[in-house]
Length: 366
Ligand code: GDP
View 1 (cartoon, rainbow, N blue to C red):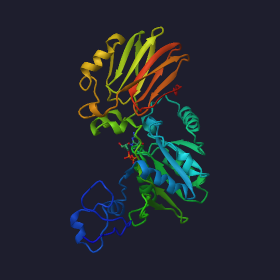
View 2 (tube, rainbow, N blue to C red):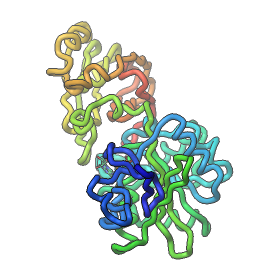
View 3 (cartoon, protein in one colour):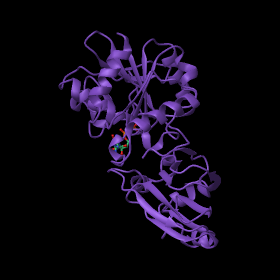
View 4 (cartoon, rainbow, N blue to C red):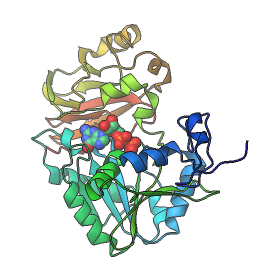
């Protein structure tokens, strides 16, 4: 077959893999001008389909952005801050400004102080080697904070182009789709461009001054717990509504299982309360520390689920992190799963989380 190119983005057309770039249903090949499904949806429904990459392709994108001039908007999932962090971005962006946007603010419990979260994000970003020009919180899903975000983008881009980057699952498509739907009517305003020979596959949203907002492919980050779970389990751990904190009064030598995805041991200290902030759909099971290993062995995938089905095999084994907590109101964050607030000082605790999943401490946000 002669190689066909999409009239929208120039990518080579293929009819075999629905998920891969350039897919077109075979029937569309009859048409005079062939357009890939992604461009078709973008043109007709103003809807952007996510594209994701990893490894070398990912480095190509970062390199590509490094060579352009403009503002970089980095989107992170506030529920998976460390897991959704793109390591090494600062090495590629050079002198470009970075605006850091934390998405999914709608799931934060009411009692949480957003400014504390913003300050923590700033400090954590610096620790990870990035000094953002500003940090904002939005809910792309609910549309909350989007106007402020657009105003900030416009202010910081200083008349230049904008590159939106983020890991898969942070809500980058939801964010971009909101911009597209908010800023344009149906029409051919959105263009996609494909640079042959590279994987810098950008979707261009033109702005009034001739500059554009570019969406980049999502980056697959193996630190995300999301990549180790099947679709059902991922749904269960991903909060869709405001988190309902669960309070537990524990004596030393008691253990809590967060489904079968993490384990919290209260090792030593006076009777204390611990507040679990995870998706409302996840069950918490309390047991004796001495019984904890056996419970896991006998009930993983049943009572302790998710993981369920294939995820039981794909989830990496637990790694134990022990902490002597000196200060009251300390959060232990298990990236992608949630956090545990330690209410009282002077306790020794341990968290068991799947290998590769970041566990970090921070002052409580509440
Ligand atoms: P992408 O892979 O970064 O493009 O992410 P998507 O836009 O596909 O979103 C990933 C998941 O996060 C989906 O289940 C979305 O419904 C969800 N999501 C996106 N934005 C928000 C948000 O603002 N709040 C909440 N609660 N969920 C969101």
